[in-house]
Length: 181
Image 1: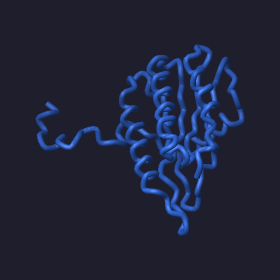
Image 2: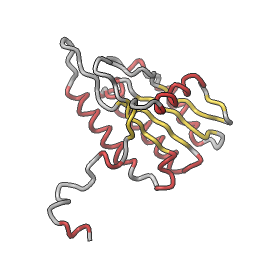
Image 3: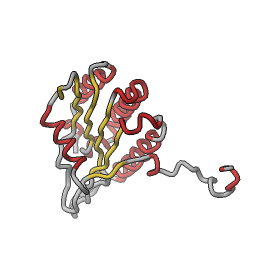
Image 4: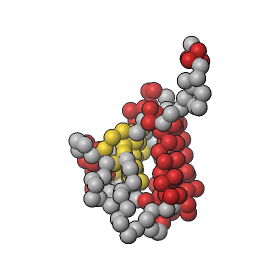
């Protein structure tokens, strides 16, 4: 899989608009496995940082709804996924989960990360990757934004990613319970 499906310049233009006071919401989908390729690691981190920074600066004035994969689709019998993709997927989920715990409690509802659950036979997400902004009450692409909102509202389609999804306790957390007192 190539990373050509992700238009980096387009994403950067949209992400720079996050600081605009007229932008009140953003819908983000990052389900293509191209995000896990080594060539996009730095840009994936840039997107994560831009979203987290905007959320921390703007608080509840900015609502972020984000969809990522819950798990990687099963590879077909003839196609083998590189182990680096699996490692990148795990690292990304752990980092997103850990950073979710950094958002102040008052802002938590404004920053929602949903993990898209793929059916056993699905090899890709039914919703395209995107970053759409709600500016002055209008979405940059209303049809695509509606697809994101319908996806997260459908029962059994997604599950939330939270700070509880990663062990932040460390290797010695249960060795001495007195650290919690």
